[in-house]
Amino acid sequence: MRLDIWLLAGAALVLSAILAVRLSHRLGLPSLLAYLGLGLLIGESGFGINFDNAELAQTLGWAALVVILVEGGLTTNWRNVRSAVPVALALATLGIAVSIVVVAVAAHWLLALNWRLAFLLGAVLAPTDAAAVFSVLRRLPIPRRLAGILEAESGFNDAPVVIIVVLLSSVEAHGPGPWLLVPLVVYELAAGAALGLLLAWLGIFALRRAALPASGLYPIAVLSLAVGSYGVATLVHASGFMACYLCALLLGNARLPHRPATRGFAEGLAWLAQIGLFVMLGMLASPSELPAQVIPALVAGSILVLVARPLSVWASTLGFGLGLREKVFLSWAGLRGAVPVVFATVPMSADVPGSDRLFSLVFVIVVVFTLLQGPTLPPVAGVLRLPVEGEAKDLDVEAAPLEELKADLLEVRIPADSALGGVEIFELRLPAGASITLIVREGRSFVPEPTTALRGGDILLVVTTADVREATERRLRAVSRRGRLAGWFGERGE
Image 1 (spheres, rainbow, N blue to C red):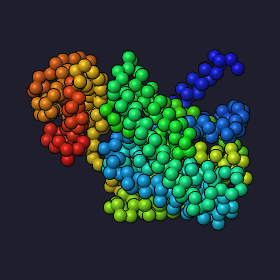
Image 2 (image 1 turned 180 degrees about the vertical axis):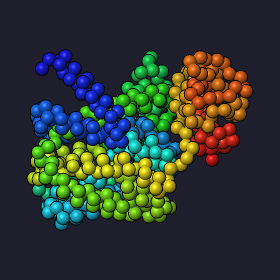
Image 3 (image 1 turned 120 degrees about the vertical axis):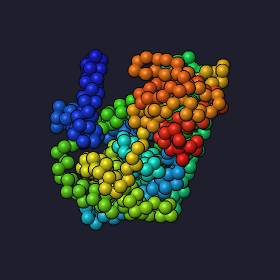
Image 4 (image 1 turned 90 degrees about the vertical axis):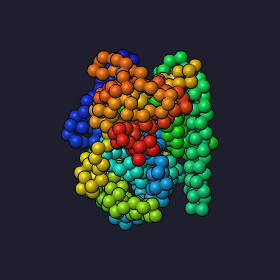
């Protein structure tokens, strides 16, 4: 086929996916279903494009998951998840183990799967999906610690699960015994974390000292560092997923130039990765095999959502001071998405007996329970009285370095519902060394006076020395959330 035809077909597919997302949002359906539907439409039972290469699907799926994890790390605010990390790590380790065992036992006895397939089913269904969690929870005004737990868990739990799935899918007759499995997992996770943090620190050191000739190079450099950490980690048999997520998390929260531009670039790539990933998985599925798995999928999915996930949450959160309402929401908000379906391609590429049925089973579980859980999260949060009223959206702050002056120029966009509206500039009490030099309002710019009142929708240009930049951002965010009387400590004005 000619290149122009390929480019036209690819562009048409991406535009169709974007329009499908818009339609799915209007109907209240998760975009995952739109993408999978497109894949099924152009697959063997639709337009007749036959795609059955499980090994290629696994490779492309791995690449897409790396991009999605990197975007998740870059867009995660460390201040929001810092206190949640211990609970998230417990969910991503002990919680994973509990979920795998419960689902495996149920699948063995209720679905007559042999033990290997039963544990594979439990493993591929254990991790929550980063893309699904990030896209849904960041729109819910729930307590920050609760949102932070779910975000961090979805970023951490892919790493241990992929190790388990690969080991269970190994064609070797005698894999490592349980006494070797735990040390192996610990080594891979620890080594991956160390490498990811080390490469991030080296990247931050270099980017702060190398003034790149074009602002568009900064997002490319940051993405390359984070994705490269995956490759470095896998070369030494460490966890690439853990490395790239932590590398991206550190890079996304470091004082680097053009952070919002980097986040926007990463979000665009992540959307493209999701579109390609879900469409490919839809093409890989065999629609003729799916109806036979509906009843088994309902059984296994119900065990996962109503038994395994709550037990894993209860076991993992003991001693962390979470209330009953928070635990119930954590149990219901364990969203699955592309990750389980991608992991189900691992035993297929390894020619594990029964892996085709396993893939179809996981595919149906993901579709049915994504449709069930995703749209119900807001009402469930409301019933549990979890939403926090008056939470303005976070400020969008862009930074351009002024190297010779050792200063930064911040571009601050004030959301319409921000408490900065009506606050006069002198009431901000910005630290010495920071000054609002220009306001852009309704397309017109002017130099403000100390008594100029800010409005929602304003764009502020703030010049600040490097020493007080962080304090300036913290102060603006505090006032944005709690108004002119906000305290100095913490983004919430506490």
